[in-house]
Length: 473
Ligand SMILES: [Ca+2]
Image 1: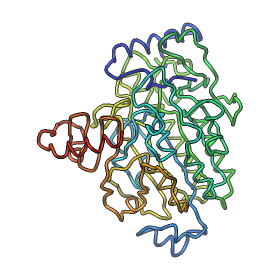
Image 2: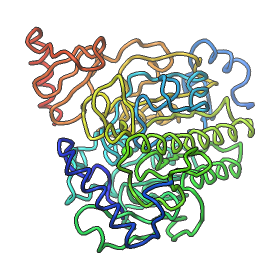
Image 3: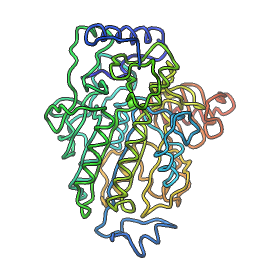
Image 4: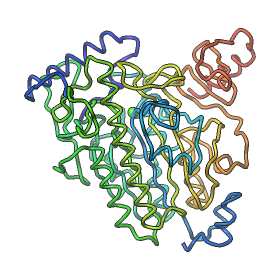
Protein backbone atom coordinates (compact mmCIF):
# COMPACT_ATOMS: atom_id res chain seq x y z
CA UNK A 1 0.00 0.00 0.00
CA UNK A 2 1.06 3.56 -0.48
CA UNK A 3 3.14 5.23 2.09
CA UNK A 4 1.67 8.14 3.89
CA UNK A 5 2.76 11.71 3.45
CA UNK A 6 3.54 11.72 7.12
CA UNK A 7 6.06 8.98 6.49
CA UNK A 8 8.20 11.47 4.69
CA UNK A 9 9.93 12.51 7.85
CA UNK A 10 10.36 15.43 10.17
CA UNK A 11 9.29 18.76 8.87
CA UNK A 12 12.62 20.52 9.25
CA UNK A 13 14.08 18.49 6.42
CA UNK A 14 12.32 20.55 3.83
CA UNK A 15 15.07 20.54 1.28
CA UNK A 16 15.54 16.80 1.36
CA UNK A 17 11.80 16.41 1.29
CA UNK A 18 11.35 18.45 -1.85
CA UNK A 19 14.18 16.64 -3.56
CA UNK A 20 12.79 13.29 -2.55
CA UNK A 21 9.29 14.06 -3.76
CA UNK A 22 10.30 15.57 -7.05
CA UNK A 23 12.82 12.80 -7.68
CA UNK A 24 10.18 10.19 -6.91
CA UNK A 25 7.77 11.92 -9.23
CA UNK A 26 10.25 11.97 -12.07
CA UNK A 27 11.05 8.33 -11.56
CA UNK A 28 7.40 7.46 -11.72
CA UNK A 29 6.92 9.43 -14.90
CA UNK A 30 9.85 7.88 -16.66
CA UNK A 31 8.87 4.39 -15.72
CA UNK A 32 5.15 4.34 -16.10
CA UNK A 33 3.78 7.14 -18.16
CA UNK A 34 4.32 9.10 -21.30
CA UNK A 35 5.30 12.58 -20.29
CA UNK A 36 3.90 15.50 -22.20
CA UNK A 37 5.05 18.46 -20.23
CA UNK A 38 5.89 18.72 -16.56
CA UNK A 39 2.24 19.39 -15.85
CA UNK A 40 -0.65 20.48 -17.94
CA UNK A 41 -1.64 19.94 -15.54
CA UNK A 42 -40.32 11.75 10.48
CA UNK A 43 -42.34 11.60 11.42
CA UNK A 44 -40.19 10.69 14.29
CA UNK A 45 -39.08 14.15 15.31
CA UNK A 46 -42.04 16.27 14.37
CA UNK A 47 -44.21 17.99 16.88
CA UNK A 48 -43.00 18.62 20.35
CA UNK A 49 -39.54 17.24 19.94
CA UNK A 50 -38.79 19.16 16.78
CA UNK A 51 -40.08 22.32 18.39
CA UNK A 52 -37.84 21.69 21.36
CA UNK A 53 -34.91 21.23 19.10
CA UNK A 54 -35.28 24.62 17.52
CA UNK A 55 -34.53 26.36 20.75
CA UNK A 56 -32.99 23.91 23.09
CA UNK A 57 -31.82 20.38 22.86
CA UNK A 58 -33.15 16.89 22.77
CA UNK A 59 -31.86 14.21 25.05
CA UNK A 60 -32.06 10.58 24.11
CA UNK A 61 -34.72 10.08 26.75
CA UNK A 62 -36.98 12.30 24.69
CA UNK A 63 -36.38 10.29 21.54
CA UNK A 64 -37.67 6.86 22.48
CA UNK A 65 -36.74 4.37 19.82
CA UNK A 66 -35.59 7.04 17.43
CA UNK A 67 -32.02 7.48 16.47
CA UNK A 68 -30.66 9.94 13.93
CA UNK A 69 -28.78 8.89 10.85
CA UNK A 70 -25.11 9.60 11.42
CA UNK A 71 -22.94 10.80 8.54
CA UNK A 72 -19.28 11.70 9.01
CA UNK A 73 -17.60 13.49 6.11
CA UNK A 74 -13.84 13.49 6.54
CA UNK A 75 -11.51 15.54 4.36
CA UNK A 76 -7.83 14.66 4.08
CA UNK A 77 -5.24 17.38 4.68
CA UNK A 78 -7.68 20.26 4.22
CA UNK A 79 -6.14 23.33 5.82
CA UNK A 80 -7.69 25.99 8.00
CA UNK A 81 -7.79 28.61 5.28
CA UNK A 82 -8.68 26.23 2.46
CA UNK A 83 -12.41 26.74 2.96
CA UNK A 84 -14.39 29.67 1.68
CA UNK A 85 -15.97 30.50 5.02
CA UNK A 86 -12.55 31.23 6.47
CA UNK A 87 -11.92 33.78 3.75
CA UNK A 88 -9.90 31.51 1.49
CA UNK A 89 -9.19 32.07 -2.17
CA UNK A 90 -10.42 28.49 -2.55
CA UNK A 91 -14.16 28.39 -3.18
CA UNK A 92 -16.25 25.93 -1.16
CA UNK A 93 -19.89 27.04 -1.57
CA UNK A 94 -21.43 23.77 -0.37
CA UNK A 95 -19.30 23.61 2.77
CA UNK A 96 -19.95 27.28 3.44
CA UNK A 97 -23.69 26.69 3.31
CA UNK A 98 -23.38 23.63 5.52
CA UNK A 99 -21.50 25.64 8.13
CA UNK A 100 -24.07 28.43 8.00
CA UNK A 101 -26.89 25.92 8.54
CA UNK A 102 -25.09 23.98 11.23
CA UNK A 103 -22.79 24.68 14.14
CA UNK A 104 -19.28 25.80 13.37
CA UNK A 105 -16.81 24.13 15.71
CA UNK A 106 -14.21 26.83 15.74
CA UNK A 107 -11.62 25.16 17.95
CA UNK A 108 -11.66 21.53 17.00
CA UNK A 109 -8.43 19.56 17.40
CA UNK A 110 -7.16 16.46 15.67
CA UNK A 111 -3.84 14.66 15.49
CA UNK A 112 -1.30 16.08 13.03
CA UNK A 113 -1.38 13.05 10.69
CA UNK A 114 -3.90 10.85 8.91
CA UNK A 115 -3.56 7.59 10.82
CA UNK A 116 -3.74 8.75 14.44
CA UNK A 117 -6.69 11.02 13.73
CA UNK A 118 -8.63 8.18 12.11
CA UNK A 119 -7.76 5.90 15.03
CA UNK A 120 -8.90 8.44 17.62
CA UNK A 121 -11.99 9.46 15.69
CA UNK A 122 -13.20 5.87 15.42
CA UNK A 123 -12.32 4.76 18.96
CA UNK A 124 -12.66 7.78 21.25
CA UNK A 125 -9.20 7.00 22.56
CA UNK A 126 -5.93 8.78 22.02
CA UNK A 127 -4.04 6.96 19.28
CA UNK A 128 -0.95 6.51 21.43
CA UNK A 129 -3.05 4.09 23.51
CA UNK A 130 -2.67 1.76 20.53
CA UNK A 131 1.00 2.48 20.07
CA UNK A 132 0.40 4.63 17.03
CA UNK A 133 3.27 6.99 16.60
CA UNK A 134 3.12 10.73 16.37
CA UNK A 135 6.43 11.12 14.61
CA UNK A 136 6.74 10.14 11.02
CA UNK A 137 8.78 7.04 10.39
CA UNK A 138 9.12 4.99 7.23
CA UNK A 139 9.79 1.84 9.19
CA UNK A 140 6.57 1.90 11.18
CA UNK A 141 3.32 0.69 9.68
CA UNK A 142 0.90 2.12 12.19
CA UNK A 143 -2.44 0.36 12.27
CA UNK A 144 -5.45 -0.01 14.50
CA UNK A 145 -5.39 -3.31 16.37
CA UNK A 146 -8.26 -5.66 15.47
CA UNK A 147 -9.43 -5.76 19.08
CA UNK A 148 -9.97 -1.99 19.25
CA UNK A 149 -13.63 -1.12 19.75
CA UNK A 150 -14.74 1.20 16.95
CA UNK A 151 -17.59 3.62 16.51
CA UNK A 152 -19.06 1.26 13.92
CA UNK A 153 -19.14 -1.55 16.49
CA UNK A 154 -20.62 0.70 19.16
CA UNK A 155 -23.35 1.85 16.76
CA UNK A 156 -24.00 -1.73 15.67
CA UNK A 157 -24.84 -2.58 19.26
CA UNK A 158 -27.10 0.48 19.36
CA UNK A 159 -29.18 -0.80 16.45
CA UNK A 160 -27.52 0.80 13.45
CA UNK A 161 -27.79 -2.04 10.98
CA UNK A 162 -26.45 -0.20 7.92
CA UNK A 163 -22.86 0.88 8.45
CA UNK A 164 -20.63 1.93 5.60
CA UNK A 165 -17.01 2.99 5.34
CA UNK A 166 -16.47 4.70 2.00
CA UNK A 167 -13.15 6.17 0.94
CA UNK A 168 -9.78 6.04 2.64
CA UNK A 169 -9.42 3.55 5.49
CA UNK A 170 -5.70 3.77 6.28
CA UNK A 171 -5.99 1.80 9.50
CA UNK A 172 -4.44 -1.41 8.24
CA UNK A 173 -4.52 -3.37 5.02
CA UNK A 174 -4.47 -6.94 6.28
CA UNK A 175 -7.64 -9.00 6.34
CA UNK A 176 -7.79 -8.74 10.12
CA UNK A 177 -7.52 -4.95 9.99
CA UNK A 178 -10.07 -4.54 7.22
CA UNK A 179 -13.00 -2.16 7.85
CA UNK A 180 -15.37 -5.11 7.45
CA UNK A 181 -13.65 -6.57 10.53
CA UNK A 182 -13.98 -3.32 12.44
CA UNK A 183 -17.74 -3.03 12.55
CA UNK A 184 -18.56 -1.82 9.05
CA UNK A 185 -20.82 -3.88 6.82
CA UNK A 186 -20.01 -2.08 3.61
CA UNK A 187 -16.64 -0.90 2.35
CA UNK A 188 -15.72 0.85 -0.85
CA UNK A 189 -12.46 2.65 -1.50
CA UNK A 190 -8.80 2.46 -0.59
CA UNK A 191 -7.10 0.70 2.28
CA UNK A 192 -3.82 2.62 2.20
CA UNK A 193 -2.78 6.21 2.56
CA UNK A 194 -2.36 7.52 -0.96
CA UNK A 195 -3.43 6.61 -4.47
CA UNK A 196 -3.32 8.14 -7.90
CA UNK A 197 -6.66 9.93 -8.28
CA UNK A 198 -7.31 8.56 -11.76
CA UNK A 199 -5.90 5.04 -11.82
CA UNK A 200 -6.24 4.31 -8.08
CA UNK A 201 -2.84 2.71 -7.86
CA UNK A 202 -0.35 3.38 -5.11
CA UNK A 203 2.46 5.83 -5.77
CA UNK A 204 5.70 4.62 -4.22
CA UNK A 205 8.18 7.32 -3.39
CA UNK A 206 11.28 7.77 -1.33
CA UNK A 207 13.96 5.13 -1.11
CA UNK A 208 13.88 2.54 -3.87
CA UNK A 209 10.56 3.88 -5.18
CA UNK A 210 11.25 2.99 -8.79
CA UNK A 211 11.64 -0.66 -7.91
CA UNK A 212 8.41 -0.99 -6.03
CA UNK A 213 5.19 -1.95 -7.81
CA UNK A 214 2.21 0.33 -8.18
CA UNK A 215 -0.63 -1.71 -6.69
CA UNK A 216 -4.28 -1.14 -7.41
CA UNK A 217 -5.71 0.03 -4.08
CA UNK A 218 -9.41 0.30 -4.86
CA UNK A 219 -11.85 -2.15 -3.39
CA UNK A 220 -15.46 -3.10 -3.00
CA UNK A 221 -15.71 -5.17 0.14
CA UNK A 222 -12.77 -7.56 0.08
CA UNK A 223 -12.50 -7.53 -3.71
CA UNK A 224 -10.34 -5.43 -5.98
CA UNK A 225 -12.50 -2.93 -7.84
CA UNK A 226 -11.86 -1.61 -11.36
CA UNK A 227 -14.26 1.34 -11.30
CA UNK A 228 -13.03 4.15 -13.51
CA UNK A 229 -13.11 7.80 -12.60
CA UNK A 230 -11.73 10.48 -10.34
CA UNK A 231 -11.50 9.05 -6.84
CA UNK A 232 -13.27 11.96 -5.14
CA UNK A 233 -16.24 11.47 -7.49
CA UNK A 234 -16.26 7.70 -7.01
CA UNK A 235 -16.38 8.16 -3.25
CA UNK A 236 -19.19 10.69 -3.60
CA UNK A 237 -21.09 8.39 -5.98
CA UNK A 238 -20.91 5.49 -3.58
CA UNK A 239 -22.04 7.60 -0.61
CA UNK A 240 -25.02 8.88 -2.61
CA UNK A 241 -25.92 5.33 -3.64
CA UNK A 242 -25.67 4.12 -0.07
CA UNK A 243 -28.08 6.80 1.15
CA UNK A 244 -30.48 6.21 -1.73
CA UNK A 245 -30.57 2.48 -1.07
CA UNK A 246 -31.12 2.83 2.66
CA UNK A 247 -34.53 2.43 4.18
CA UNK A 248 -35.73 5.65 5.70
CA UNK A 249 -37.00 3.61 8.65
CA UNK A 250 -33.63 2.34 9.80
CA UNK A 251 -30.88 4.65 11.03
CA UNK A 252 -27.66 4.48 9.06
CA UNK A 253 -24.05 5.18 9.89
CA UNK A 254 -22.07 6.47 6.94
CA UNK A 255 -18.38 7.26 7.30
CA UNK A 256 -17.14 8.98 4.15
CA UNK A 257 -13.39 9.49 4.24
CA UNK A 258 -12.41 11.41 1.13
CA UNK A 259 -8.79 11.07 0.08
CA UNK A 260 -9.01 14.66 -1.14
CA UNK A 261 -7.22 16.98 -1.10
CA UNK A 262 -4.27 14.81 0.01
CA UNK A 263 -1.33 14.44 -2.37
CA UNK A 264 -0.75 13.66 -5.18
CA UNK A 265 -1.93 16.89 -6.75
CA UNK A 266 -4.36 15.54 -9.34
CA UNK A 267 -7.35 17.57 -10.49
CA UNK A 268 -10.13 17.06 -12.98
CA UNK A 269 -9.19 18.94 -16.16
CA UNK A 270 -12.54 20.72 -16.38
CA UNK A 271 -12.04 22.21 -12.92
CA UNK A 272 -8.54 23.41 -13.60
CA UNK A 273 -8.57 26.40 -15.85
CA UNK A 274 -4.94 26.08 -16.82
CA UNK A 275 -3.94 25.14 -20.34
CA UNK A 276 -0.35 24.57 -19.25
CA UNK A 277 -1.12 21.82 -16.78
CA UNK A 278 -1.55 18.24 -17.88
CA UNK A 279 -4.20 17.03 -15.44
CA UNK A 280 -5.14 13.71 -16.97
CA UNK A 281 -1.65 12.29 -17.07
CA UNK A 282 -0.26 13.79 -13.92
CA UNK A 283 2.00 11.36 -12.17
CA UNK A 284 3.87 13.76 -9.96
CA UNK A 285 2.97 14.15 -6.33
CA UNK A 286 3.36 17.86 -6.91
CA UNK A 287 5.17 20.27 -9.20
CA UNK A 288 8.15 22.50 -8.63
CA UNK A 289 5.99 25.60 -9.09
CA UNK A 290 4.03 26.84 -6.07
CA UNK A 291 1.43 28.75 -8.06
CA UNK A 292 0.68 25.67 -10.12
CA UNK A 293 0.44 23.55 -6.98
CA UNK A 294 -2.08 25.93 -5.47
CA UNK A 295 -4.17 25.98 -8.65
CA UNK A 296 -4.34 22.19 -8.78
CA UNK A 297 -5.06 21.98 -5.08
CA UNK A 298 -7.92 24.48 -5.42
CA UNK A 299 -9.49 22.38 -8.16
CA UNK A 300 -9.16 19.29 -5.94
CA UNK A 301 -10.96 21.08 -3.12
CA UNK A 302 -13.64 22.11 -5.61
CA UNK A 303 -14.26 18.41 -6.33
CA UNK A 304 -14.39 17.66 -2.63
CA UNK A 305 -16.85 20.48 -2.06
CA UNK A 306 -19.04 19.40 -4.97
CA UNK A 307 -19.27 15.86 -3.64
CA UNK A 308 -20.04 17.05 -0.13
CA UNK A 309 -22.82 19.06 -1.77
CA UNK A 310 -24.14 16.00 -3.61
CA UNK A 311 -24.25 13.93 -0.42
CA UNK A 312 -26.06 16.70 1.47
CA UNK A 313 -28.49 17.14 -1.42
CA UNK A 314 -29.24 13.42 -1.40
CA UNK A 315 -30.01 13.59 2.31
CA UNK A 316 -32.41 16.45 1.59
CA UNK A 317 -34.03 14.72 -1.38
CA UNK A 318 -34.69 11.63 0.70
CA UNK A 319 -36.41 13.77 3.31
CA UNK A 320 -33.77 12.91 5.89
CA UNK A 321 -32.34 16.32 6.65
CA UNK A 322 -34.01 16.86 10.03
CA UNK A 323 -33.12 13.48 11.41
CA UNK A 324 -29.62 13.19 10.05
CA UNK A 325 -26.60 14.29 12.03
CA UNK A 326 -23.78 15.31 9.70
CA UNK A 327 -20.26 16.01 10.94
CA UNK A 328 -17.69 17.47 8.58
CA UNK A 329 -14.03 17.66 9.54
CA UNK A 330 -10.50 17.49 8.19
CA UNK A 331 -8.16 14.82 9.53
CA UNK A 332 -5.22 17.20 10.00
CA UNK A 333 -4.02 20.59 8.88
CA UNK A 334 -2.95 21.38 5.35
CA UNK A 335 0.51 20.82 3.94
CA UNK A 336 1.93 24.27 4.53
CA UNK A 337 4.74 23.97 2.03
CA UNK A 338 5.23 24.00 -1.72
CA UNK A 339 2.34 26.46 -2.10
CA UNK A 340 -0.18 23.68 -1.55
CA UNK A 341 -2.27 24.55 1.48
CA UNK A 342 -3.00 27.68 3.45
CA UNK A 343 -3.45 27.43 7.21
CA UNK A 344 -3.19 31.13 7.90
CA UNK A 345 -3.49 32.82 10.32
CA UNK A 346 -2.45 29.66 12.12
CA UNK A 347 1.21 28.65 12.29
CA UNK A 348 2.57 25.46 10.87
CA UNK A 349 0.77 22.65 9.10
CA UNK A 350 0.46 18.92 8.71
CA UNK A 351 2.95 16.91 10.76
CA UNK A 352 3.17 19.66 13.38
CA UNK A 353 1.46 20.22 16.71
CA UNK A 354 1.32 23.93 16.00
CA UNK A 355 -2.25 25.09 15.40
CA UNK A 356 -1.95 24.85 11.62
CA UNK A 357 -1.38 21.11 11.95
CA UNK A 358 -4.06 20.24 14.48
CA UNK A 359 -6.83 22.85 14.43
CA UNK A 360 -9.03 22.15 11.45
CA UNK A 361 -12.26 23.27 9.75
CA UNK A 362 -15.18 21.45 11.38
CA UNK A 363 -18.94 21.82 11.54
CA UNK A 364 -21.84 19.69 12.69
CA UNK A 365 -25.52 19.80 11.78
CA UNK A 366 -28.50 18.05 13.31
CA UNK A 367 -31.54 20.18 12.60
CA UNK A 368 -33.91 18.12 14.74
CA UNK A 369 -31.89 18.66 17.88
CA UNK A 370 -29.62 21.66 17.59
CA UNK A 371 -30.24 25.17 16.48
CA UNK A 372 -27.91 26.03 13.62
CA UNK A 373 -26.17 29.23 12.66
CA UNK A 374 -23.95 29.20 15.72
CA UNK A 375 -20.27 28.96 16.49
CA UNK A 376 -18.92 26.90 19.38
CA UNK A 377 -15.52 28.13 20.59
CA UNK A 378 -14.93 25.56 23.32
CA UNK A 379 -11.96 23.33 22.40
CA UNK A 380 -13.34 20.00 21.20
CA UNK A 381 -11.49 17.06 19.72
CA UNK A 382 -11.64 14.04 17.48
CA UNK A 383 -11.71 11.75 20.52
CA UNK A 384 -15.02 13.32 21.59
CA UNK A 385 -16.83 12.04 18.52
CA UNK A 386 -17.39 8.45 19.67
CA UNK A 387 -18.68 9.20 23.19
CA UNK A 388 -20.94 11.97 21.90
CA UNK A 389 -22.41 9.91 19.06
CA UNK A 390 -22.77 6.89 21.34
CA UNK A 391 -24.84 8.98 23.73
CA UNK A 392 -26.97 10.26 20.84
CA UNK A 393 -27.45 6.70 19.58
CA UNK A 394 -28.80 5.69 22.95
CA UNK A 395 -25.84 3.71 24.24
CA UNK A 396 -26.39 3.50 27.97
CA UNK A 397 -22.93 2.47 29.05
CA UNK A 398 -19.95 3.90 27.26
CA UNK A 399 -16.97 1.65 26.55
CA UNK A 400 -14.21 1.68 29.15
CA UNK A 401 -11.00 3.59 28.69
CA UNK A 402 -12.27 6.46 26.56
CA UNK A 403 -10.22 9.64 26.47
CA UNK A 404 -12.88 11.74 24.77
CA UNK A 405 -15.89 13.40 26.38
CA UNK A 406 -19.56 13.34 25.60
CA UNK A 407 -19.88 16.98 24.46
CA UNK A 408 -23.60 16.92 23.71
CA UNK A 409 -24.39 19.79 26.08
CA UNK A 410 -21.59 21.91 24.66
CA UNK A 411 -22.97 21.43 21.16
CA UNK A 412 -26.44 22.22 22.40
CA UNK A 413 -25.18 25.48 23.85
CA UNK A 414 -26.06 24.43 27.39
CA UNK A 415 -22.59 23.91 28.82
CA UNK A 416 -20.10 26.71 28.22
CA UNK A 417 -16.92 24.83 29.03
CA UNK A 418 -15.52 21.39 29.73
CA UNK A 419 -12.52 22.51 31.81
CA UNK A 420 -10.19 19.99 30.26
CA UNK A 421 -7.04 19.90 28.19
CA UNK A 422 -6.55 17.99 24.96
CA UNK A 423 -3.43 15.92 24.40
CA UNK A 424 -1.79 16.69 21.08
CA UNK A 425 1.48 14.82 21.49
CA UNK A 426 4.20 14.05 24.00
CA UNK A 427 5.08 17.72 24.42
CA UNK A 428 1.75 19.40 23.77
CA UNK A 429 -1.48 20.08 25.61
CA UNK A 430 -4.17 22.58 24.65
CA UNK A 431 -7.11 23.89 26.62
CA UNK A 432 -9.47 26.81 26.58
CA UNK A 433 -6.87 29.35 27.67
CA UNK A 434 -3.41 27.81 27.38
CA UNK A 435 -1.38 25.74 24.98
CA UNK A 436 1.90 24.16 25.98
CA UNK A 437 4.37 23.25 23.21
CA UNK A 438 7.55 21.85 24.74
CA UNK A 439 8.69 24.66 27.04
CA UNK A 440 6.65 27.35 25.34
CA UNK A 441 3.32 28.55 26.63
CA UNK A 442 0.83 30.37 24.46
CA UNK A 443 -2.30 32.21 25.52
CA UNK A 444 -4.04 30.35 22.77
CA UNK A 445 -7.51 31.85 23.15
CA UNK A 446 -6.15 35.31 22.40
CA UNK A 447 -3.03 34.34 20.44
CA UNK A 448 -4.18 31.65 18.00
CA UNK A 449 -1.13 32.33 15.84
CA UNK A 450 1.17 31.20 18.68
CA UNK A 451 3.29 34.31 18.35
CA UNK A 452 4.20 35.12 21.96
CA UNK A 453 5.72 32.66 24.42
CA UNK A 454 4.39 33.68 27.83
CA UNK A 455 5.90 30.79 29.80
CA UNK A 456 8.03 33.09 31.96
CA UNK A 457 5.01 35.10 33.03
CA UNK A 458 2.93 32.07 34.00
CA UNK A 459 5.18 29.46 35.64
CA UNK A 460 2.32 27.90 37.58
CA UNK A 461 0.38 27.21 34.37
CA UNK A 462 3.47 25.65 32.77
CA UNK A 463 4.05 23.48 35.83
CA UNK A 464 0.47 22.31 35.95
CA UNK A 465 0.32 21.51 32.24
CA UNK A 466 3.59 19.61 32.38
CA UNK A 467 2.33 17.50 35.24
CA UNK A 468 -0.84 16.68 33.36
CA UNK A 469 1.16 15.89 30.23
CA UNK A 470 3.33 13.46 32.17
CA UNK A 471 0.20 11.59 33.27
CA UNK A 472 -1.20 11.41 29.75
CA UNK A 473 1.87 10.18 27.91
CA1 LIG B 1 -4.46 13.55 6.33
